[in-house]
Image (cartoon, rainbow, N blue to C red; front, side):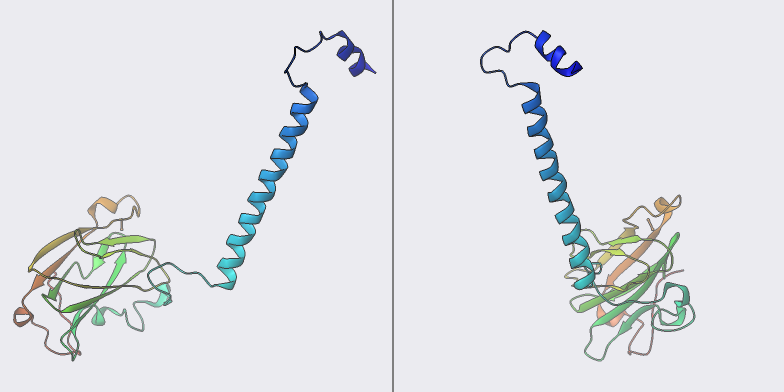
Length: 195
Ligand code: CUA
């Protein structure tokens, strides 16, 4: 009753002005439509994530970050550069707050190079400027990047993902050297140039 009384007290709307009740109804419909679209998108994200087993883009290999130092590919003695039978190089690096292990690696020039990285704690970033090497290093996963260096030289590689208070001090070096200058000669040897 109160409503109709106040309505009757209002001056008549000018031509072309939409009554408040119509505006409210339209807004409510649009709101419901948006909420429904949002719900559909959330369902799509969850369903594709679970059904497609989506993982970080670079790789789907998993590794237990708690036992990296005890067993498997990333034990300390296996880190650094290995030269495979075909002359390509495989470089294994562990990133952890706040260092890369090893903190300097050598790779051969003009040969396929495969970086395999993982993290022992939080997400770090590995990026070599002007190359295709740019990956997040996520705990629990192995990030693999394949590349080839056309020139010798040295890359100074700061951690590329904010990982905590010591992030700015987290660096590694990648030295690109002629194959004959590498101290590593066999798939069983590992080399690093860290002091
Ligand atoms: Cu590690 Cu930033």
